[in-house]
Length: 117
Length: 114
Image 1 (cartoon, rainbow over the protein chains, first blue to last red):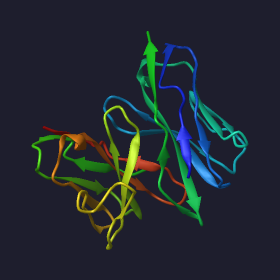
Image 2 (image 1 turned 135 degrees about the vertical axis):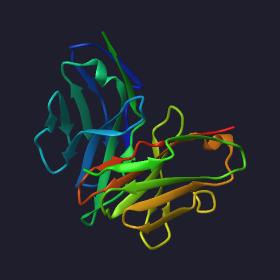
Image 3 (image 1 turned 45 degrees about the vertical axis):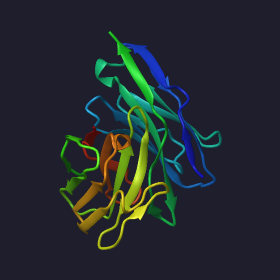
């Protein structure tokens, strides 16, 4: 069974600094997608960034970038120039692709990020 | 992206009663899902809402407890039946717009059972 592990329950970063959130996953599939979602106190799940497993190039989205290591099954999120609004729970998620059809999302346990002014 | 409206946003219910949560999407979507997020926990998939047929439930979730309807491609409901305090959670509706696209979520329903 596929699993997603986030080993850091909580992280803290100073405003304007850089922080990296870790995520590892376990799968025997070669084709899948990986995501980072952000959940602020409003509880809205917001997509931060997405990575296709077949792409070697790491995805970037403004201040957010990932380090995708397929062989190591690692998918970390780097937040540069951290802002107070980045404070939230961050979830790593894995989406298997079976026979070309998307399937259910598997979430990690989350990392609570605090941003210190 | 899609605009997903979920109602109610929160509710406080008595033990033994039932609550129906509605999810309305502003466009037709193939796949809709219902997730539960218990306090301080990650998201757990309850079921896939299938249009025109019975929902597909994950292990640990049963239709009698969480009946789901999906009468068309833009609307679904989740009922939490015979509630107990252990059902206190955030319930989230989500949709997939197409192949390889990420899940988009509604704002969630915060349920407290007393």
